[in-house]
Every structure is written in structure tokens, then in C-alpha cells.
Length: 625
Image 1 (cartoon, rainbow, N blue to C red):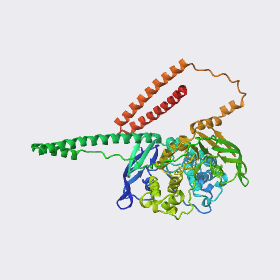
Image 2 (tube, rainbow, N blue to C red):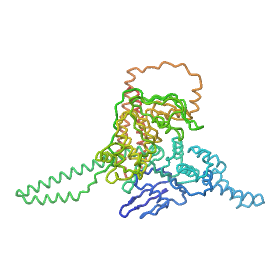
Image 3 (spheres, rainbow, N blue to C red):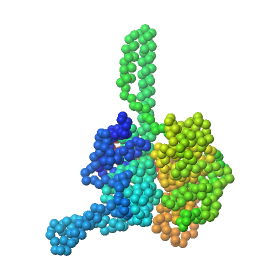
């Protein structure tokens, strides 16, 4: 059954320039779908049309009758005297109304009204009250608020006094508490720390209703949605899988279209050469050949050729680095920092070496940005020592980017801060997609993402061997995030970064520093291994095992070379078999490109095979090393 039907939407904010240009798709009951597209592609416009906030120029949206829709992007206006807790309680208005009617019926029944209609109505209301959690509303509010990291003190504040991020988080909690059939989520992970995002992912994965989510959080998309719709050129392209499937499938489709385009162009070139040769021979005395040449030229005109596939323009600048050979990049000894009575952390001892890539993580308010400021000497520790190595040259991208004089233009700022002549500054800005009149825009008029891009253009010019980034992917769309990742992939020196972007962390971190409970915990591993260790730490069975007396360690049995070779041969056969199945699956997807249900089935099978292949490769590497 279809929950949302989007039919041939057309909408533009300027005459002749449609943001949505014939957009059509259907969302089926219970589907969890991610909406992708570059900034300005029309994602938020689509949501505003679905909710009735704006009327499209053409086309329409049909939502299944009697389905309740909850929207994250819209924060209702509430009276000035309402607390945040009162706002959360608005999610239970239906339950409160049922409870009120039940009390009225109870009074009637206590006065002697035991008629069949009264009893039937009371039984129905009792069932609904129980089904909607009427007997545990306070516990439900506590569960959701705690999961999203909303403290009790914040719930007692006036809603009007909360920050924009706090209001968004409160509104998300209210939506979750409502008895909603369809959730429309516009950047739901914004303003949430990592533990709250993990809680939200778990909630959505168990949510039986329909979800339509706009998000730049690729880790979230991988875990919360099972289908991707990309808006490009005002129309929809469909990918039956998670974000990771979308990335690979989009690359495959591009290569397929490019191959088809090149094949057609090669055929056209052959036909044109044949026509030219015939014309030449006709001029040499055989006029009849002109007719054959004209026939070939008409054939070329009638050929239906595909347009050359285009990829999104990517910036090509790269970090310039200085080779670093010393062991000590950063030394921290017994460092502590407090603000008034609030202790952020204490007793921190760390040594960071050349080439390490460290992710500094922790919930909001644990002191991550403060720790970075201590390293950059913008703050001083209350106790202990924080020192950079003697040959370390740093570059720093702060979380909130600002410039000394934001009344200067982009070009003037680049010339002043990077000490470049005008021609070199324009070339540099062009590599960062500031082109034409863009360079004459005042810095104060730039968006957060554009300011980050300008700052990167300045700091990436310098030779460096320690790069420090504080939330580098904030304000960036997916294309820009991928560009930053491409640039970092070529950077081989020390990297320290704060991020909530788990996809980014997973890709780059070789070491995790977690600020928690006033301490810094050092995990000398990547993000996936860190998650495994955290899961084991949280397991009651494992905690109990830790408390029991340790057994005497036994000597590790060595695997013989013969056994090792047999295991490797077995794994190589299994890998070859899985790769063959993946090839067959991809061919089947091509053959069933118009069969939506079959594509979903094949996409699930492809994901499972891909996971098996990754596990086999990891096992193979363990034996091979």
C-alpha cells in the first residue's frame, strides 16, 4: 500500500528555472527512505510541498487517508509560558483526551449508569488508553528524553528560552512520543551527540511506520534507511539499498553510461569517416557514391544517442605537507581543565606520534573543543602540561569559522591571510569553487559551509605536519564532505579531529580518544573496533567475567605453516565463490532494472554477500600476515 505518492511535481522560485521538474515517486507503507541531492536540489522544497506549506506550480502529493504525519523541520509556535516538558506532553493530547472521557464515564457508572453503550464505550477507551501507553506516559517521556540527551533541567525551562538546537531536539522527542504513522525528518541528527544519534538510529530501525529522511549523515543513512531517492535535475533516481549501496551503484551506472556513450560515439565516427570517404570517391568520378554518403549521414542524424554522463564538479586542491620524522607530535601530562565548579577532565596523559590519525569524541559538553583550544594555546590547562613537538607545524580549522575582518571580500581575505598576489589568489580560490563574481562576495555574506571552504583554501596552502580539525564536515553537503575526505586521503602526516560524523571517523581514525565522565579514555584502534570494545564493556556477562579471577594464561598454540597454507587456500576459494555470486547478482539487477520488488530482493542479497566478502578478506589478512 502506498503511503506517499508524489506525482509530476514542478516548482520553481524563478521563471523558467524549476527546482523540481517532473519529480515523481511512491513511498510504500513501512518503507524507510533517504532523500539525497546536492544543496539547492529541492529536498527541503519537496518536504514543504508534502506538508502543504507551499503549493507546487504543477503536480501534487497524495498521502494515504487517515495517516498521521510528523515533521521534524517544522517547530510549532507555543505560548510563551509553556515549558519544554509541556511541549513534550502535547504529544499525548489524544491519550489525555481519552483519559478525560474515561473519568467522565466512570462518574456516570458510579452514579448507576451501567447501560450497554456506556460499558462498550468505556471498554473501547480503556483498550485505546492502554495501547497508547496511557499508564506509563511519564516513563515514556523519560525514556525518549534520556535517549536523546535531554536533561531534566532543560525540560523544566521555558521552551521559548531554548536555543535553536535545543528546540529541534525537543521537537524530535515530541514527534517520537506521538502516535505517528509517517515521519518526515529533515537532518534529524543535527544538534545530537553520538550517543543520542545511536539511540535515534535504533528507534528508527524498530519503527514500523514510514520514514522519509533528508540527511547528510552517511552512517545514519546506512543504518536507518533501506532505499535511496536522489533528486538530480529536478527528477528522481532510485537506488534500492543503503547509502553504501547507493555509492557503488551510482559509480557503476556512471561507468555503464560512459561505456555506452563511448561506444555510440565510436560508431558515429566510423559512419562519418565512411560518408566522408564516399564523398571523396564521388568527386573522383563516381557521382552515385554521393547518394550512399547522404544515406549514411541521414542514418547518423536518426541515431538516438545517450548524452555524455556528467559527474559533479569536484575540487582538486590537496593538502601540502611537510615530512615529519620525530616521534613526538603532541605530549600531554596530567592535564586538567575546569570552568568554575564544573570539571571537564583531569589526569590526562597522552603521547601522539607522527602519522597517527586521532578522533577526539564524546557527548556534547564533555570538553572536546576546549581540549583542542588547549592544544592550540588558546586556553591554558588548570594543571599539567600540553606541548607540541619541536618540529611540529600545525594548521587548524575551528568548529565556528570566523575571519579578522568579515567586511572584506573573499578575494581580499585570501590575498591578506595567505599573503598572495591577486592572480595567485584567484587561481587558488578557483580550485575551491569560488569563481567569477563569487570572489567579490563579502565574507560576512557567506554560509557556514562556504566559510569553512574558504578557511580550508587558506590553511591547506601551508606546509604542515599536524592538521587539527574541529567538526570539519559541519555545514557541508555530502559532495563537499567527500571532497574533504579525498583531500585527507592524500595527506600522510598527523591528524587530530573532533567529529560527530561517524562515516568520517570510521574512514580516517586509527586511534580514538573518548572524553567521558571527566576522564580521557585512549583506544588505540579504529572506530569499528572501538564500537566492539564499547559493546563488550557494556555487556553484563563480560563485566562479570572481568571480575572473576583471571585464569593462568596459556601459551598460544602456533599454527603450522602447512595448516596456514591450507587455510589460505580454503579462504581464497571461498572468496572467489562469493565474488562470482556478486557478479551474478549485479547481472540480475541489470536484467530486472524495471522490477522494483525484485531489485529490493537482489539489493538485500548483494549487501549480505558484500558483508561476507569483507569478513573473508579480513580473515585472509589474518592468516596472510
